[in-house]
Image (cartoon, rainbow, N blue to C red):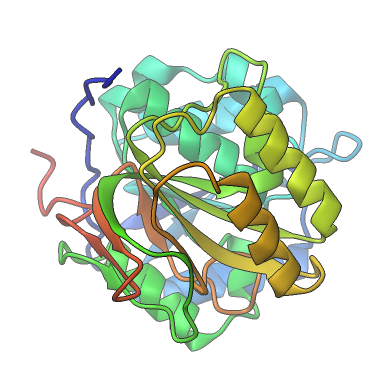
Amino acid sequence: MQIKEKKSIKPRCLMPGDTVGIVAPAGPFDPTKFMKGKAVLESVGLRTFFDEGIFQKHGFLAGTDVQRADQVNRLFADSDVQAVVCARGGYGSMRILPFLDFKIIQNNPKIFVGFSDISVLLFVLHTRCSLVTFHGPVVTTLANTAEQTIAAMLRVMTSNKTLELKPKKGIVIKPGVSSGFVVGGNLTTLCHLVGTPYTPHFNGKILFLEDRGEAPYRIDRMLTQMKLAGCFEGLKGLFLGSFEACGKLDDIFRIVQEVFKDVNIPILSGFEIGHARVNITIPIGLRATLDADRQILTFHEPATVITDE
């Protein structure tokens, strides 16, 4: 059964002098890396804003669930803030989901950036608010990232040009061409949404996956669980980012091939997106075409708009 897609809400692109709000929705972070990453944002002509509360710690979390959710809600409601970038991933984003004000977020669309554990928020803000979100670096990783990462982040956030990505070392796992709305992120994080009110379903979607520090058998287990839960029914395509410290890539590719052997979809690996030093920013919730034969991912339209219209 085809599901009618809601029109995605695009945020306004950033202009020189715009303010980026920094939020800590997951784990606590290294203050030194935070300040270095903050300086990177300011070095490209952006202002930064954050509440001192983001430095608090509550066990392995950057504050209580209500406190962390409140940070997100307040930054979206703040008209002086034009974008929101997460300080760090780690763990904890899924815990704040019941406390997010989706109406405030939907009525104040802004660029929202992060990866790893933040994948939960990227996915849910898109599915619940129809907001185009951005899988890209967090503030602490900007402290020691490749110039390519920063350039790619700015390209998506500060222009309304259409994005096209071609992996330098692409590997075709399954050939073919397909189109759909791009969703996804960290495999472990998305898998943990199964069985919750936010269970991911990828009917009509092109799915992106990446991970770090997961043994091949655990990757197999997570993909199998999601398959048995029906998450992949109607999937249109799949592309893979980095799988850092996950064993041999050939083993990962073999697992993916086996899990999706009964579906006729293009599957392409090799994108520099995820936990490696190069982490290219991509929009979540925007329609694209995945051409595994030509090894290219082409988004159909810009991810941002010039004005608030």
